Image 1: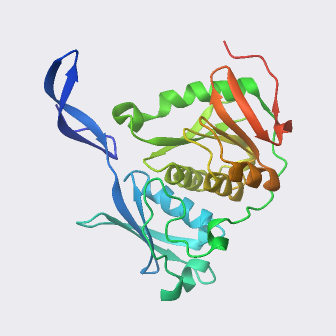
Image 2: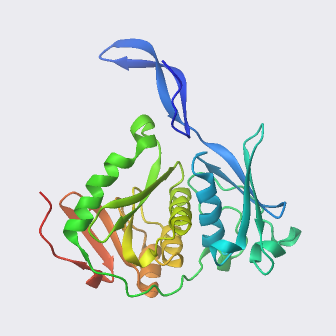
Length: 276
């Protein structure tokens, strides 16, 4: 069987058992490798990530971590394959926070695929109050239903491996515009944020959808990027609800076909006929 062409996917021979029978077959496996982020050659963090859409990841991570405040402050991204993983060597402009990194500002720990705070050293670094989001559009529940259906069809890595999260951006009518995938839910969202900014899409012209729980860092990243509504397929945490409430973000959890729960600022999600 030929090697897959999908970035972030490899093939491995496995023993597959079913009804007492087993065969040796090729299987598609999601890649998870260390990705080191360097700003002007100074190491900042190592995240376990899926090696796909890394330029989007570099931009989205830099924005959500406050290393830059606008896309043009990220002047260059060089993807450097290494024996142990991949380096994302970024050059940021004068005045950007990432430009002034020193040894006393480096993260101390690597970020694991399920971790959004590894390496943070103070409570202030962990729980950052996101800015207040714009008013944003009203979204009909039929648009949310349409986005849920469309997302399932756009998860190419997960369709092969069943092992990654997705973050998607949908227009106000529920059409999926962009999808990014990663073994880490927060990495997928960073990739989506980067893709949105690279495409010049205004974050207030639609809504976000993630195939994970809505933890506090997902809310922080979404609000910081200007999202006004974030829908998660799984549950939110109490801190995520608190941060969504204080920042003005509409937070939706348990978003499934035919049902959802709104945890904050419900005024943006309005009743509408279910799609056929």
